[in-house]
Structures are given as structure tokens and as C-alpha cells.
Amino acid sequence: MHVNRTGIHSLEVPHEFDATGSFDVDVVNHGESLHVHLHLDDALSSVASIDAANHHIEADSERRIRVTVDGDGPVRGKLKVVTAYGAETRYVDVVVPEGGPENEPVIVDEELAKPQPKTETESEPLLEVLSTETLFAAGGGVLALVVGLLTLALTSDFLLTLGVLIVVAGALGALYLTVVR
Image (cartoon, rainbow, N blue to C red):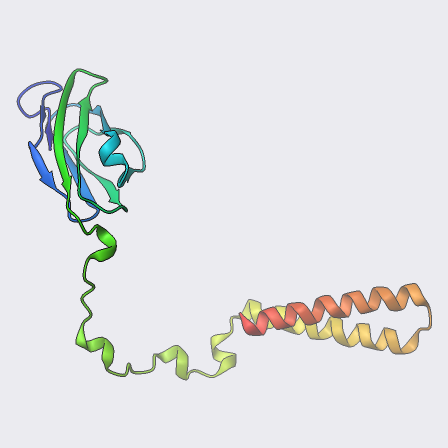
């Protein structure tokens, strides 16, 4: 669609559009910046949606607006296009055929059936893959475990023992998350 091509706030849209799935509305602005409002009528909004209705189009620029079709047709509805807060209004007949996007065929390339070569990170040793920060955190966790276990072995105070067990459990959890991550 074109705005500001034949005059200020002018609007040129196609009369009809067949949507076989989600589609983009390309707005080409040939003049000063302006706002474009898109609205789906009730029939069309039952199978499609737009993230935002109002769009600011910069001067002499192009903007792509996604219309997501997530329902099944057949549906015939209207896309209302308004420029400059009502200066111009046009309607595009949109047809969503029976079948909808969930029935579209998925084309799988034959290359996916072939075994893929291992990447460099899959063949690297564990210490080369881990970052310095991760190794430092793991070392701190091991140190906390050692100090906690030594304190536990040398004390007979119940509250201190309970506190050390909590610290040891936290350190073990952190080590687990560091290695599993």
C-alpha cells in the first residue's frame, strides 16, 4: 500500500487480497510522516490479529506490519486502512480460504535426513567450554563445601550444624546448576 504518493494523506490499497496464511502489510510512505491505523472487521478478526492498530510511518520510508492468521477459513472480511486520524479511509477485501495455516504443507529438505557433522563445541573438552566465571563460581562452591563440612565435623552445636547444612545444600545446588547448565 502507498501513502502520500498522489497527495498529502493519500492512500492507495488493493481492492482484494487472498491470505493463505499470515501476511505482511507493506506501507510505503512517499511524503511526510503520518499515522496509519489498521482494523480487522469482526469476520476477519475471528481468524486473524494485528499486534498494534496504530503505526507511525516516518517520512519517505517503508514499514512492514504483520497480520497473523491463526484460524481456519473460509472467511471473507475487510481490512480497514485509515491515514492521518481519519483523513483518508480505504477497505481491502481479505479472503482466508478453507484449510487455514495449520493445514499448510510442511516442506522438509532432504538434507535434514543426513547425519550432521559435530560442531567444534561438541568436540571440545569440558574445561575449554566452561567460562572463567563459571570455573571461579564452581571453585567457590567447592571451597564453601569443604569449609562447611570441616565446620560440621568439628562442632557439636545444633544451630551451627543446621546453618552449615543449609550452606552445604546451597553450595551443592549451585554446583549442580553450574555443571548442568
